[in-house]
Amino acid sequence: MFDGFNLEMIELPEATFRLRRGGNGPPVLLLHGHPRTHATWHRVVPHLAECYTVICPDLPGFGQSSVPADAPDHAGSSKRAKARHCVALMRHLGFDRFAVAGHDRGSYTAFRMAMDYPDVITHLAILDGV
Image (cartoon, rainbow, N blue to C red; front, side, top):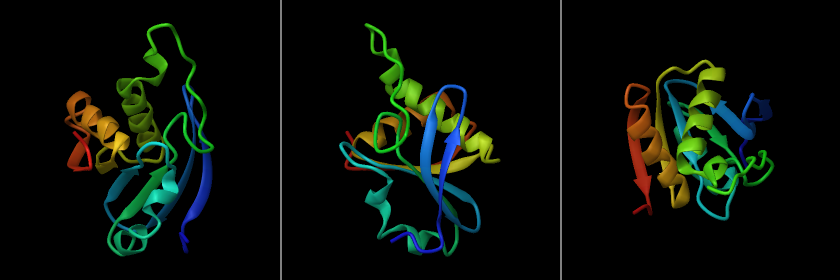
């Protein structure tokens, strides 16, 4: 599973991400659903990695990524916060523009990223979203 992919922990000011990274080419970010982790994508990534640099993180609050600090309004766990953290992650990895695919609740974060960061998202795929 994830042959040829690196397993990394990336610490950012607002979040720590556990992720898999592999492949070569334009970047694509894959966001899993609830209650899953990056492993959701294990059958897809070998094919994508032939043409793309694939980033598969555990979303904040899932797997081994950090749990967001929360408040009474749940702002730390919001889709907007997750979108902001994912864009920060991709920028940290050197990608100013990228494609994103989200499955289930990951699609909510992907959709929010496309709305909040339209100049960053090159392509958007929503799988089993609303």
